[in-house]
Image (cartoon, rainbow, N blue to C red; front, side):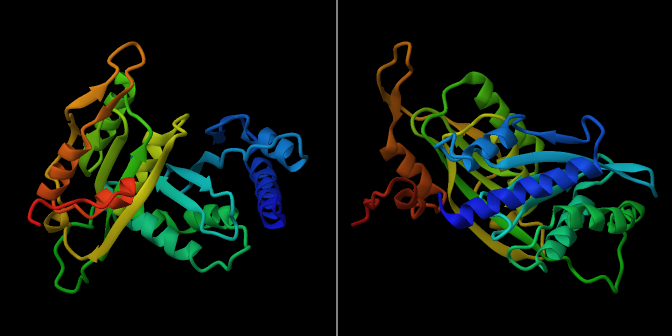
Length: 292
């Protein structure tokens, strides 16, 4: 165990103790994995060899004026606070545009902290001090104004790799989340499983956070592409909807469902959507164009 990793995990436990003292009522701090703090302590004591899961939780904040609630989703990377904290605030009282602006403001504020500084408590204080204006102005955001400056958003495309995607309930969850959020892309089922999701950064990150938990471990984001835009991002999309991609498969169709997808067909699909370059990133294999 490196000293830097040990220090990071110790600081994370310290910050969690502060949070539980600030929010002592049951249900105010909801851990994604109720055993994660115990597993981290065992890891630090040398009683556990495997690196424990990241600390992930949701804190429900009560804003006094107006009387609304904000759910703050927090993910602590293993190297936090020396790498950026992952935060996302949401409220049913905010429309998508105002939620987008709220999270841009929060992310900008957290970006002012130096590496090594704990910042969850500061993020909570920022939301309590600054979120009211986003709720009070939510009905005005679409009103035309000759003086209004265009809002810059980050358009993101994530390429996600999983060892396999077989289960019907998981496939349904992926499609449901993709269609609920304002994202486009696809989910290729089978072995391997590939997901592409594109849209505004906040929507893609919410998609990524939602599908992974509580217990999807063998999945990773292999590549991400982002660009700043002042528009709605429609001209940047490579896909028109979020759909399941079903290709020919070969292998054992028995109880194990251990079949591999036809990667040649998948490469052709990527070419049609101007994404051939991703094939090597996903599989470490150079694609061979039929034009050469």
